[in-house]
Length: 224
Image (cartoon, rainbow, N blue to C red; front, side, top):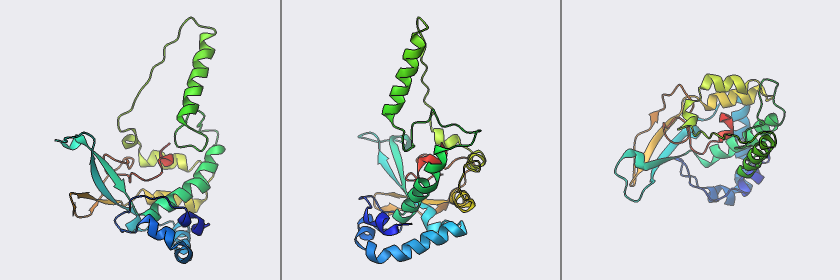
């Protein structure tokens, strides 16, 4: 795990509740790389995500110029920078490669979001190809588009982990991800004030923004 490379290339981003900014980790990468690598290694082999790394700070950001009700705010949830860095490493090193060769029971051919080779451009090209192919043998076709409200909220942990178990990933990584979805906490920061930390009680998927059951920064690939 090249932690120095990871820290040295951190992009400017907001800090979590630990108040450790990305620029500080990037500037001190030559000194921090070794101890951070040890922490990351221990976290993965012990299959335990530190509780501080699973505690998110939620900042309500107005979606309209004059918000008057809770729905006028977009809750942006952030965990510490180190937590996000380890999540990104897990996804790029284990999840992405596993998705390239899924088991027979799983197929991601029509999944374009949150994949290394996926993009909105690829989705449009695939749709146009399908439409043109069908029009070559049909006079017309119907295209139906659906938008699931809070789609990530409806994914159950048990279903998610049963599919994750089918992927070719190490047991320690699977158990690390399982622990990642357990015993989360959050607090809300607004107008310079911060609420007390509360435990998340949620049986469904930890959604990024709305139910506060999932840190906003977490890699959405886990919820494919």
